[in-house]
Image (cartoon, rainbow, N blue to C red; front, top):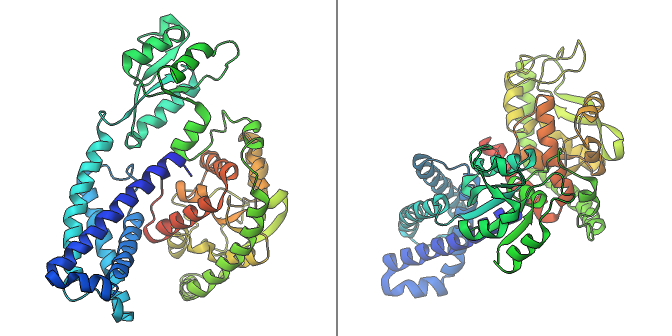
Amino acid sequence: MRAKHWKRTFLLMLFESGLIYVCGLAALFIRFGSDANEELIGDYGWLKLIVALLVVQCAFYLFDLYDFSMIRRLSILALRIVQALGLAAIVLAALFYALPFMLLGRGVVFVHFLLMLTVMSGWRLIARWMLRSSRFAEKVLILGTDSQAVELARELLQRREAGFEIIGFIGHDPELVGQSLINPSVVGVMDDLEALVRQHNADRVIVALSDRRGKLPLDPLLNVKWREEVTVEDWAPFYEGLTGKVSTEQLQLSQLIFSDSRSLRSYRRLRRVADVMIAGIGLLITWPLMLLTALAIKLESKGPIFYSQDRVGLHDRPFRIIKFRSMRTDAEKHGAVWASKNDPRVTRIGRLIRKTRIDELPQFLNVFRGEMGIVGPRPERPQFVEQLEQVIPYYSQRHLVKPGITGWAQVRYPYGASVEDARMKHQYDLYYIKNQSPLLDVIVLFETLRVVFFGRFGQ
């Protein structure tokens, strides 16, 4: 995933874990006074506090409290904190009922949650102000003025919470100086790069030149990097780290060829074992939900419960995918067509199970057969693959990895129903192919839970 984003998120979670634990300690001392040490050590209070901490952190994650791009208004922030703590309270109540020895003590939990509500709300207001303040933002100069540079600026402007402030563009043509390309203007030319960095107190220079032949100011860039101690970064890795996707318009196959793949063989072997284990656990956990879904489909409309369809898998090999039926039985009497946003062919139950991805659960059987993995690009129909390969650059590269029940594109972008949606999802799929790792797979699984339970997608 986006390395810098997740590094910041991890540090934030680590700091907030400390705050939550301190709130628990304070609750123990408020409730038991001088006997708090005995509760903390003798009755394994420290371990109980850690369990409570983990439950609260998971609730915060599920309610997007670590995705600052989702929390734009104070009212939403306050509501999400209350919702997350409410969910954590329910989970802990169920845990204490099942395992009474895990209870911290009468009144401790109430005081703990009251302190967390006060402390976390106050801290989040401070964190939100810091992230939005230009005083704490990294000042960025974009080297380039073409479409690639403008696309990068647009993504930065949409993600102000990422902690970057665009100073402006630096180009070759003096006549462009002062002109606005999107919102920031062209502030100077490349010959004046060092002076511009000092003048604007820049922290980072991003090279976004589509054509670099004879145009890249190598000496000024070296001086800026080593003499001015400014971060100089190439457009592609910065764009991927910021957005979690790969631009198909700017991608070169060399970026995929030379991406880190030293441990890819071992990763794929271990992943097959993990896929089978997760599919088995998934069937055990979800069979009641699948049974209810099957019953609801049967009661709502005539026809089969399951739907089988040709899809393109690893190395372009076709296979039959298994899904819960979400459309009427005559949905494709005129041939294969894209599903639309409010497709009249989709049943009421179908609309629900599509939104929550429940219709994909029978594909655990495809995982057992080795046709799919748990995580990977979603397999597409052969008719659409032929069409999309004609209009989307590098679309065939998605078949270099095994398709999955869920994927990076599925948790970052809503249900697709057009060629443009397929283009956008493919950018996320390419990011996954280029950066696949056990950590990214775990992140996709956690994000999938958030989509299933809350219907919200990352950005």
